[in-house]
Image 1 (spheres, helix red, strand yellow):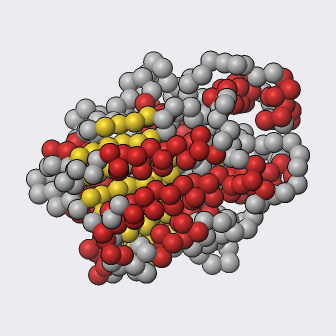
Image 2 (image 1 turned 180 degrees about the vertical axis):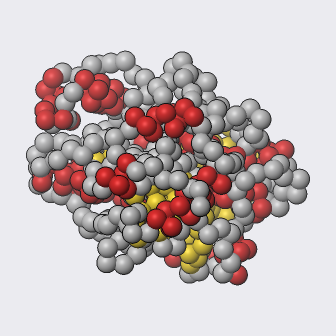
Length: 472
């Protein structure tokens, strides 16, 4: 049995038409929707840790990254992206290594440039790994530099600062001479993945990881994709400020249209990849797993970007669909709580690996088919800000036990009221779950960072600043 996993970066679950629709309206995703119809679908899937690299560490190893002990990385050739933003630990075998040792031909096709920076090792265990250059600020090209006029086109003057201008300069420099659709990033990733399939038809069994950084910003798409969602012409807007920035109505519409257009472009080329598998007869003996690392806030609650505090569903809820040969289990939906490290465990289970190393993820498909839970909550780590999610509750807090935000996940006031003061017993219970998942304590270096953080907007003084005690 062959196994393929397709991972999109920053793909919002609600932008896949079959799940639901984002606040700004339906996104056109016919190929994702067709895949949904042919798959077993999981409605409560979450990351293990965030953002980009911690998420992939859990996916690639089946090990927890939270609570980030030994996660304070300061490596040459990279910025400090977040707690846990580093290579896969040498003592943790990867899924690719295990499968290769068990007769699988393994391959990684990726344009997620963070994985390939100096000191990173996310390609461990792959017979072939292909890095497609040029996303975001990957120093793929050194010229020609942008004129001020070009900078003003790609980045509204109101959003220009030293960091944002530097970002746009490199992004657009990397796109020089690449304005045919086939040369955009998602098309290149799925074309390269399709090429690998044709070149490796002699493999007895294979494990293919397809990593698309799109629809991560910058949201650069051929104009016809954006015009599917906004025909009005005006200034361009293709990035986040990672702040509660107030874009005017047009710029917010333009941002959402560009993001939606990029999702639709991803959908089109994912369809190309799936069609390649169909004509090669691979859909009859291949399991295809579809997911993302996280989503992205695009004006939701006035925020543009992604953040760990306060965390919100548009970033933390992820799509997870699994297509089996012959579309077995199609139409089956499961609401069990699943996390990234469980996907690694399930891949090893599907491959029938007997002498597996000890991992912390839990294989879940068999339980899901029986309607049995594998866990009653998810703890998601992002720096000093754990999030605990149960069927009914969503808890944000800081590792110094302040900044408590307790939201209901369902009902009229979902995510609109803080219930921390009203339900202190629930807060204590959920914080204890996070501590248990952390092994009983948090790293001191992250607790110190938490003490210096600002509290989230809208917190009451008691909920945000009163320290919670877990003593009875």
